[in-house]
Image (cartoon, rainbow, N blue to C red):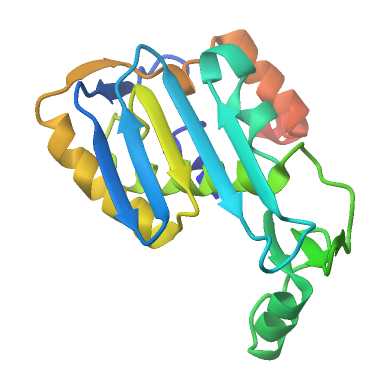
Length: 206
């Protein structure tokens, strides 16, 4: 999941982000991830699974935290996705034994087996989660793994995410360190997030 980037930090602990000034790009076949310098944090992801299922098909999703709302609303609920043949193969191989039918969005041919989607373009939003999570794994302590600027990914996966993160490390050597708007939330917003996620009683109990 992509929540590992620091969404649970205390309000009093500022998280910083790098603001690179140079363009970065990595490719693998027709898949690519690129970073374009900019004034705000923005992430865009494109997927194309039309060869597997028209239900998933081609999707693009973009998230600008300062414009589109917080992570908890825009991305956090986006589930992973797969086709029915993939799910059955994983199950026969001994994986996903603890999962339920609602843990993932499953495409069966040209239709969803377990609709509806929890969010518009849920598969593309989940890929944004994957990207944020992978970039966050490479982040230094106190830093957001997501840079300030526009990161665009197309048909990428975890391996290309890691390659991109390593390439970005080079760009960070000359980058400015600024407050990370992707995780900046007022205390009132944190309280709203806790309530929306149904964690209020748990927090109060602790």
